Image (cartoon, rainbow, N blue to C red; front, side, top):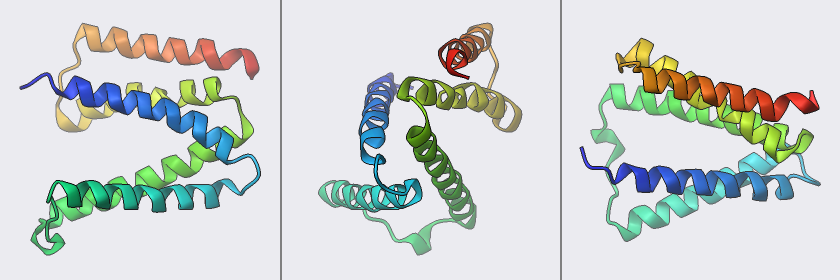
Length: 143
């Protein structure tokens, strides 16, 4: 497996940080659910542009039923996550919200081990525990 995933993962982390900053600034005077809807519309436009530039359009009727089911479930989970995230940003501080949100890493480690059979190495376990500890340290003082 190529190590180019790290470039995309770092891009994801950087853009997630900007998401928190811009999101906090964007939900100051609007309903957080409406802000999430508007943001989702923009995401659709950006994704469509990228797919068009790369000539990556595919017919959905060629997707397997398994693919469709899991993409629907992922979409529902993403939508609920975003709705919660924007409401949390509206109510809390970016550092706290982002830190608690990153507990998703620890949750993902557990879910991947349970449902996908991914190995839980000592490095992964310790890293996950450090993420949990860091989230607690950052979020706890303001509870």
